Length: 69
Image (cartoon, rainbow, N blue to C red; front, side, top):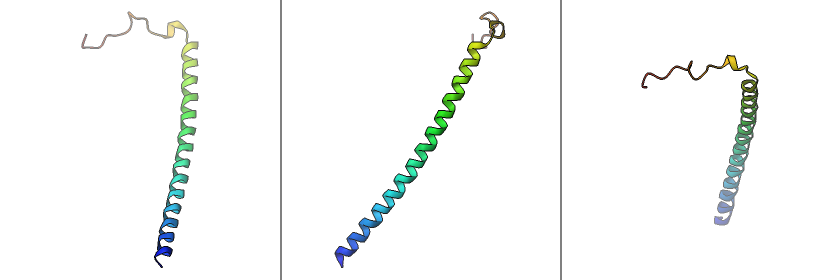
């Protein structure tokens, strides 16, 4: 009787851990997908900034200094 109880407890723990692993795997997959999307968006922004004409960017003299200077 005692051994059956221990086996049942171990089976419950294994089921719990399998569920946890599946949940974590799904979360990791979703984070990787979001990271890939963000990486692509940043690359696109970098490319657009490089293509920008110089007159679209403010010169150092045109940049306003923060009030604490």
